[in-house]
Image 1: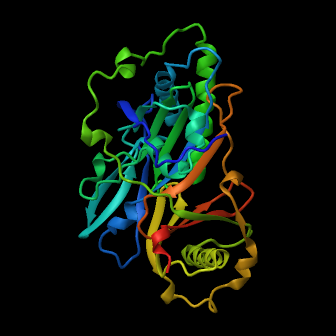
Image 2: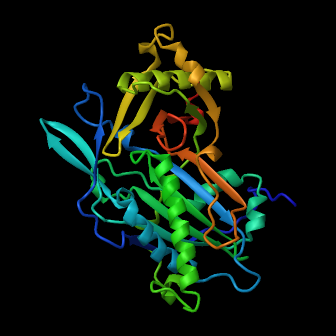
Image 3: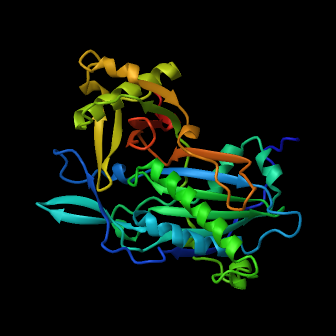
Length: 371
């Protein structure tokens, strides 16, 4: 396959439709997740609400005939059903002033995720052969940073469906790190694909989905610039670990030690010093996520429980995510996962009670932060 270089003239991505998709049923009672910081913080550090987990799934054309022009319409229906089981993904971040502290919480207020339909006037195989495909991949997955001043207006979850002229397509997902549960996103994706396939099977004789309208395909009025302007999102260098320790009391201090050990292990794997300061995201429960700033200068490796080191092993995204098909038999030809849009080092700790390991720990840093 010939490689096409990105320095050559390339067509521009065209966003043709934007809409919000809410769960098909109201969430009662409302689910709330507190965003906690260290006891010494009077307000949440603005950097703590930045960053996202991203997935891009690449699919070849659905059949040998015409490409599925109703794809985005069917996705609107199926994603609304899948959100019923994961309402926090459709929620918003809200600020609460308690004792002169600017506290944050995620509320499942059913405001909805943001769905973008886009077209890329290029053949998918040619795109995959580009020498700088990874750099251009940011066009296939929409992300806009949470507004620090008015966070209640910012979606936490985005879906972008991009169709190529050959009939191939991509599904790009961006999820705020404050939702910080990679496993929940993967479970949502699996449930969504299952609902989508069942819906197509049950409605096989229906020519068009309820939400299909020609204006979604022929975009006579382009979306407003404020709606389609995205945050430039660069992939972070990411190393994934799993913790196999059993019968441990996983308290806040132990999570900190595990985070430090994984940072040290990441530096050893990379043969370089990465950073001195970083943020640690720990999902303490389904109702609480803790975000704290840490510095390596405040720790001595000699006082850490090095016996934990033997319980930490390197792994990959593939150990925690399955390939999903939105049309039976059409598996993705490529799946890309990453942490993006971070300015500092991040360590994300996700307990895994159902995955036969104690926790998944993701160490990420922007390339320009190497020391």
